[in-house]
Image 1 (tube, helix red, strand yellow):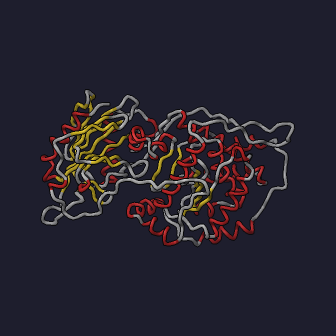
Image 2: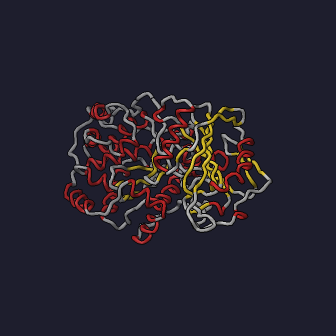
Image 3: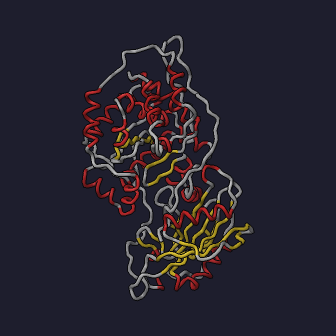
Amino acid sequence: MRWNRVLKGRLSWILTLALLVSQASAVTGGPELPNPGSAGISRDDQIKLGFQAASQVYQQIPVLPDSSPETQYIRQLGERLAATIPSQYSWPFEFHVIAQKEINAFALPGGPMFVNVGTITAATNEAELAGVMAHEMSHVYMQHSAKQAGKAQLTAGLLGLAGALIGATTGGLLGQLAQAGIQFTTQGLILKYSRADEAQADAVGAIILYKAGYNPQALADFFQKLNSAGGQPPQFLSDHPNPGNREAAIQKEIRGWPPKNYLTNEVAFDKVRQHALGVKAYTAEEIAEGAKSGEWAALNKKNGALFKAPPGVNVPAAASPAPSANTANVSLQSVLPSQRLVTADLGPVKIAHPDNWQIFPPRQQGDSLTIAPQAGLASNAVGYGVVINGVSPPRGQPMSLDELTDELIRGMQHSGGVRPVSEAQPISVAGVQGRAVAMQSISPFPDANGHQQKERDWLVTVPRRDGTVLYFVFVAPQAEFERFRPTFDNMLQSAQF
């Protein structure tokens, strides 16, 4: 059963809208960039985290090579914008283009920025495209992600707690990114900004646009275009919470700025936009599917789209135990649990596991943590072992444990091909009343005769004080599940929150 990404969602929260950007002074007669302040993560660590994450984009998402007209154009445009930032506050900005149809862009801590092909083709003029990039650049300039980490705000969405659990004990990249409000998915890196952050990025982005010679009204125009597009909102708006009438706020911000002879570069823009319309681009769903098989890493290598960190930035390769690609029948001896249990501290939960089973951290933010024998894993599937993750009510809505358990089951049925075979039953885990549900799917491993066999997936959900729910899925082929049941029971009995 594939347990990495059976649900998607986001925590929802309400924050006070505040524009924190200083107004233009009478001395300069024009707007000045505010002091970005300090963050809870050092400059060097922000750069390291951002560029490590950027290197993973090249493994999970189709990226255009540096030699492409789109990348060359975006790089020149980005460098013009970055030149407006005082050197003491600047970052080693890098600019890349993703071969994705949806309208989106994101910038990582330290400076790496990615712009979708769909954003280039959706813009009406260069100023609108520059506005999107200036907005993203502002998040880096103001160190919004790092400041979130300073507040210890874990903002992982549905199924996003696993990265935080691992990070709490290992201090690894995924945990640090989770604490910085960064969720890595096969559709992109999603930075969880507050509405106040969004308002500030709008205002700072308008200043960057103005100082670079573009009409800052273009930023408001682009947001207005996205809002009035109709149908499902663009991915860009989904990832960037609306601070409330942002077009009016931007217009109010820029109203008193001295007029300029604004830049126009429509010949270059029209040329690259026309070329981008002919570029092979993929939907978010296609990218998610391709990431599972490693298609994009191979395609990027073939096309010469190779990640290169800027001089002086050391980006160690992110390593994680890789499951076996073997999907042939495995011997029972290679997956049976040891009688000796060892305790692992995963942060919010401690749990004992057989000493011959390994802990496999999530390979990217949003994936599950797995405790299993190496032979019990096949590609992106778990055939023997335990999957641990977390879920929270969508959009911050209060939900009971039963409601949230039902919602989790429905998501698994829809995305993972699993179905319940029993009603939810009460179960006590570490003195906390949870729910247990027997479920069934197809095992990634055939039976001894090479035939497809059913899998038993025992779901256990446990509520936490913050309204989220920690859940465990104990996995084994149905014919062998009872042999593993005592170990699964012992693991649950050992859990401490």
